[in-house]
Amino acid sequence: MSKPSKESNNGPEGPEHPHENSNRSGRRTFLKMGTLAGAGLAAGSSETKGAGGMQPDGTTPIPQDEGTVDPAEMPMTRIGDMPVSRLVVGANPMTGYSHRGELLGRLMMEYYTPQQVVNVLRYCETRGINTWQTSFSSRHPNLENHYDRVFQSWEMLQESGSKMNVIVLVTPRDWENAKAWDLLLKMKPKALIHHGHPNAPR
View 1: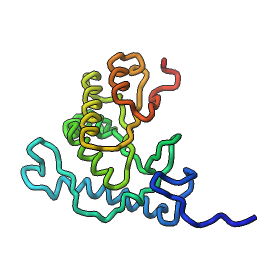
View 2: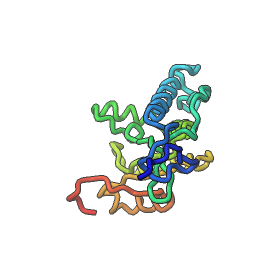
View 3: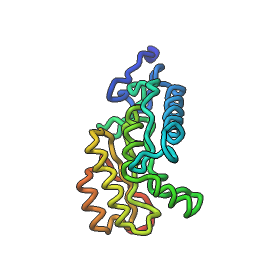
View 4: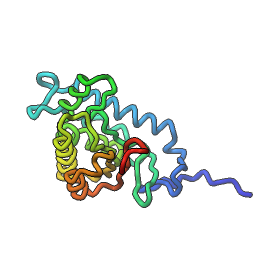
């Protein structure tokens, strides 16, 4: 029996087999890229000019200066025919799920305006991250306003020229909400994920 080839098959659309990693895009590269992305986002609030490092529209500029990471080196996998980066952008801070209390959740939602969400996602794309998992579930006191926030972020992301894949978590209460379905049909996410208690009505 011959030994498996060590040659990389990690092409522009990801490896032929989801669990294969090339030598070039191994675990160390993956972790390094995640660390650099996080450090770059943190730097956005400390390296900018003006009060609090904010722009006139109230958002924090995302640094565009490093250029130390080649997006093509991001390890990839697949969901069906869709290439998915092995590092995916989540949405807990964007939807106020701090797990540290109501106050921090509110502060998160004040910071993550739709424009700030777009800024972060576009920065992630420059680092090779091509998938955003967001949620219609929120700590927002007015759920339908939250639906509008998610939709506005997605709409602005599309208008910016982004190619980011979008996956949406949907809770049992969203399944019965006409507005949620109306916006989901407009967004056409790549996938929906049922998010909630297994015995909850679907």
